[in-house]
Image (cartoon, rainbow, N blue to C red; front, side):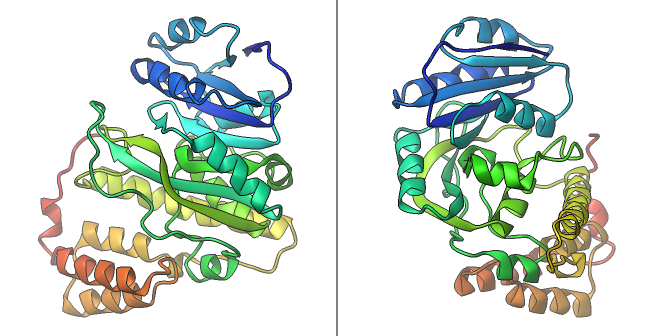
Length: 323
């Protein structure tokens, strides 16, 4: 591993960008942060063993950013390496295929200043095509704030949580939680949003202060094929298991159960199909699901999900594209 450190005074905020083979997007991500011209901020970019032109892109920013170059180890290891290299009291995260919208750093810093007990702050993201065209509504739709632990226990840790490029964490809370486990080679944000709320309060900033790029590797897609559903289910199952191990190690009384994870059961139903009784059971579970705090939105989602589930025998129509 090699580290090249920018020559700047000690910052208050560190923007940690994780990158793997996103050389075509990386400059936009970095430039969007530098364009903020936020005093007391630094940019740390971790390249996780890219085989494209990412490192040539990073070389153009020598002296303005801190770069960490390492062999490919996955997103968890990349973010952990970025945090180790960062010097700020507030850690602001960004995926290399996304970019910052104006005002993000000032809003994040203000949110932590106004909420000294907050461990995690986030904002909405605007899903956007690479050409800059917005698509879909901003995400997440429902904003969760304050003490989220009771909700998370009822929903196996699931809430309408933000993605990596919307997250900011107080370093003291990060240190208390510990680094992201290596099992999170992808979707490492699930650790941040699944663990940090157990340590303190969450602040939600309503504005969309980042652009979430919609492309083939994005978590949000127009349609979900069978391999994607299986990957999500495996990820959710592992997240519940890892969270419970963390809770036990910290001597906390809470435990999560996959039985309460409604999205997991919906994904399983999309793969296998359902009969009428199973469809109605999932509808009832969706209406009662603790992961969505907004009652009207929960009802709409539950009804839409119930209608869209394939019947038994029709589930095979899901496109079986190779991984």
